[in-house]
Image (cartoon, rainbow over all chains, first blue to last red):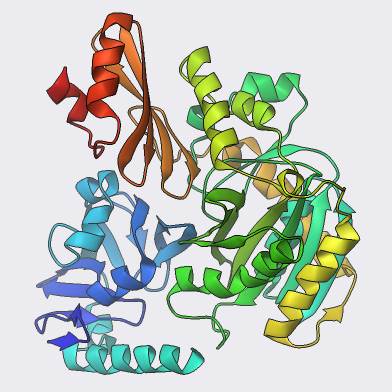
Length: 140
Length: 314
């Protein structure tokens, strides 16, 4: 599925902070969407939470810097960080160039799987992205 | 929109007011300048990699780490700051955050132009005149707000800036100073009289008024003053300043958008200083193997830079 030039794979879940979430049993793989990385711009630095850290949905679980903007990464689900992608910390541009592959950020063991039900399916995220693009065009 | 047109403030207030507003969730514009010099790290800068702390201590130059992005800057009373704090859900804020610079920097660009300086935006966040950087800018999510901060350079001390930054050897420092002088410009380079804060701030206020409507002049109230003091303690404590940041294997200093000065080891006893502009080598100097320098210069100037280039040629 695509909105404008932004790829939105159908087999993933999404949230409004532009994360994709791939749920596999009790674990979830998390990264930034194509639309999210494009909005952020060239990513120069990533600081990811370490394995073992317990996080709650909505918590800060890392920091990101692009161009000259700095912001927080916000956890889309609650759980324990099983693994974070050290390679993407060394080369954060991977989030820009391969956001759904080598640019993944976290593997999380879910502590509240019910939260998955509140995430968006691809078609809902596509609708949300379309609304965002339209509202930005209105500001212009 | 609240306006705090503060004039001279202490060095720490020149950073802490806007942080305090952002943490209080209060939108507003601050225009001010610091009454004494200091060094300011970006959120992800690594203090020990970036700063010559002993020089700063000897020179009584305090160090601050802001919550916004960008790199190390030397700030003093010859720079006028404009700092805009907006709630993250402000409908006027474009979703693509870098794009807001286009709007945020317009008042400063307009002010420069009124002084006859041909200023223009250099993506994503510099203002340049005749290809040289004349304003440093940064932004970041702070609390529930986003803070955009920038400055207008009345004059700049390239020598002090080159001494503040940690460099691998003295000749690198000289190249750093020269690179900054060649790639930066200030109001002093363009006009032969001294610009007052009042003159500059009124031009900035006019520009921001065009964007945001009539501004509401205010003085910091007790809530803001108290929060500013709290922020000062937090953002100058050793734990915060010494927080690990991005590390590079080789020394690398951004001079302006697209211009980078780098050190690269060349064999066991030699080192090269490379100036790269928009991905291409503009200047190259090698120390320790003088005989090779001419050959390398001829081969490298104008070539596209990549990490394997030196190893391949040598």
